[in-house]
Amino acid sequence: MPKKIVYFLALLVIPSLAPSQNHKIDSLQKILVSLKSNELDYVDALYELGRQYIGVDNDASLRYVTKALTLSKEFSDSLRIVKATRHKAQLFRRAGKIDSVFFLFNEALSLAKRNGYKEELKIILNALGVAYLVNGKYDAALSQLYEVLDLQEHDKDQFGISLVLQN
Image 1: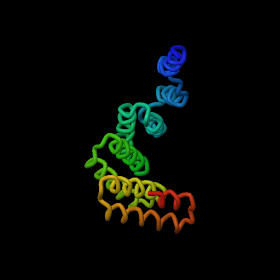
Image 2 (image 1 turned 90 degrees about the vertical axis):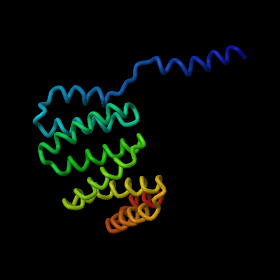
Image 3 (image 1 turned 180 degrees about the vertical axis):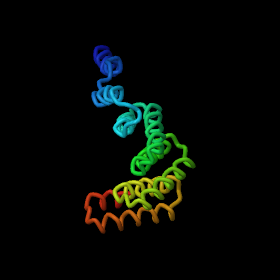
Image 4 (image 1 turned 180 degrees about the horizontal axis):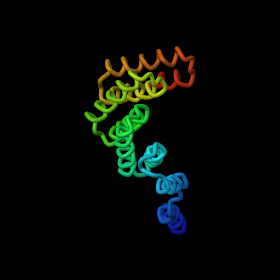
């Protein structure tokens, strides 16, 4: 019996002592160092680093996506602004900063609609609908989810339809 406990504890402790091997993050950080901050590829690397850090280190993810958003605005690149704003809203949702979540999602939604970024629009509407749902704003959630469902049905996107219906 004591041996089983020792083995069990070893299985719990040893993985936490081993260094984390996230090759995508390491590669992206090397790429970022090699790029100039006045290039759009630099913004893309920042954004992708932010995505890779979700769930690993949300503070680092927020730093990278905030920098990507700032540079996207400097470049006046609306698609990158929409993506970075959406990503930032998703991070705030994880942190429970609800007022910021709705503000950022609606900002991204407005820009995505104005510029016709249909794929981003579907992602934002779904995420916004879920945020409303989680916060008990059921009428607003239904409105967003029905809108994204209409878009998915129009595109005949079976996976997208099933994703919305799960919510």
